[in-house]
Length: 223
Image: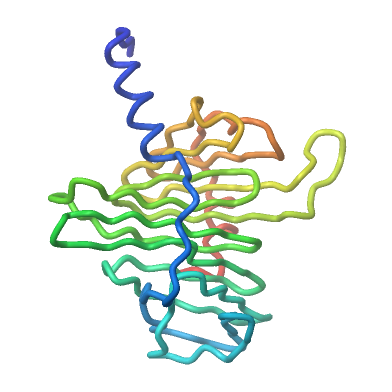
């Protein structure tokens, strides 16, 4: 389908708004981001220089860093009812989460340091700003209202083709935008059952439909 200059400009502006990452301002008091709902195995949370075991029902705050051990998982229900499920051997930080139903604003930023996580983003159709972003060292994934999985390996592969880590993104419903920090003006649009990779500092690979084997592998531990 061909699009004129106006359509391309609108897409570029929307992509920039959804994918651009800004550094949040520091705050003296921790703000609630959500609560742990399901926890299996060994799951810890790093907070204010300390570490403690995460249990079902525990509050989760902005800047918390959640780590899962072998055979472990954790599901967090965020303040807007979006959900994050973290697979085994994974680590993420809730970098920023602003939810203001009065002003109709939801701005979420979650950093996946390594491992695999599934994000079920609450559909807030009447909100003026409902951005939800996941950040790895190599990729920025932007969503408004969908279900998707991100995997990130910061160590492998390290060869002549891909250096600096590999991020894989699978869209399960609706659509998401994937870019790399150096190419935020060149996002890749994924719809249901499509995947893309971001290798090191390179732009995302073109979207393609995942094979049944890929779907099973990526979904493993996150069903």
